[in-house]
Amino acid sequence: MNKVILMGRLTRDPIVRYSQGENSIAVARFTLAVDRRFRRAGDNQDADFISCVTFGKQAEFVEKYFRQGMKMAAVGRIQTGSYTNNEGQRVYTTDVVVEEIEFAESKSSSSSGMADNYQKDFMPEPISAMGEGFMNIPDGIDEELPFN
Image 1 (cartoon, one colour):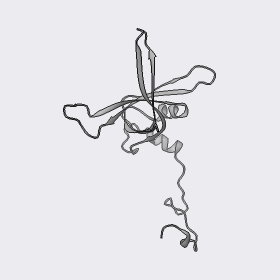
Image 2 (tube, helix red, strand yellow):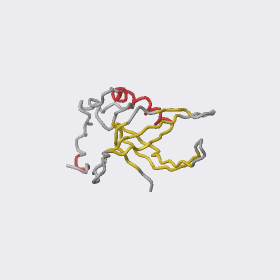
Image 3 (cartoon, rainbow, N blue to C red):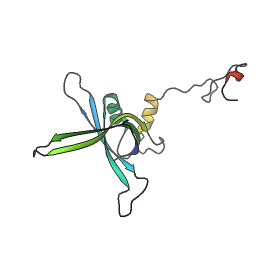
Image 4 (cartoon, rainbow, N blue to C red):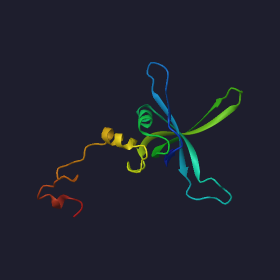
């Protein structure tokens, strides 16, 4: 199984490019600074900087709503690769290919207000049968509920 779950802050604004060709798709690259839980003796680094990439609608979502310093939760998989650079040297890469992205802080703690637009564009309307997001349960069905 190859599954990665990260929570960290963007080190800078995501870089979004579009693939060439007839069916071009968005490709977003960004780095997450993920705090380390424990610090080893003699190690001055408090965080790991994880290279991430996402494609298509997720990339467009990242471009529109995320900025440097915002906290993000990301789920994906590790992918390794290699290429030959201009000097003829082999360069090995490791990226997290992100498949799911969520805001990891409340909109009130977000400094840029981007979460406000997300709430309007992507969050479903709350159920308002009783005015507080709860549905009214008809009489006589109480014994069928798994909790009482």
